[in-house]
Image (cartoon, rainbow, N blue to C red):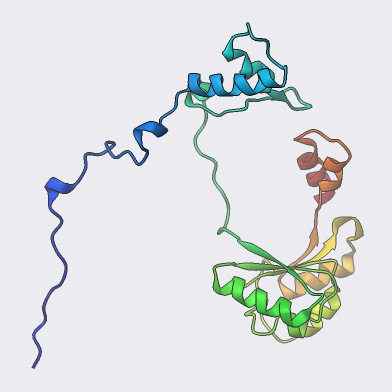
Length: 222
């Protein structure tokens, strides 16, 4: 006969720090905005971007950059910069978080080993780049749980490999939107997965401002 013994110790309340009183930094690690301005100004003076008689606070003007749309991006983010900012609440997202690992199928067995390690480590989907031996690269991957997104691969070869298996609905054949066809769309629809990928990076690479790739990407998607 055994007797159940509860384990653990009660936490003495007198040892609990007051809320907001716990400081993980050493006093010598505490710095002010003025300290940062002084150090940054010293660097700019060495580069002759500030004169010896210029105020340290001018580093804000010297280091602030402007986007093509005229939006100022300061060198340092501090609470004072957003003190008067009015928002409508925190943004929301749709669906679960997706942590996607890049898998390059040049060496199929090595790619498979890396993919399985990533999935065991918390990755939730796979981004398979290039032509691949899907039977080897995806061996042991639960396709109904881990979405697979192709990038430059053969959609028909992938579907042939996955024939008779349930696919996660976020699986994507990775066909560029510019190459979209009704046949590919219907094939993906029949399997309950996605077919096309919109890549707006080329708009950015051509010198577009920050919002333009988003606008262009939406246009391609439509």
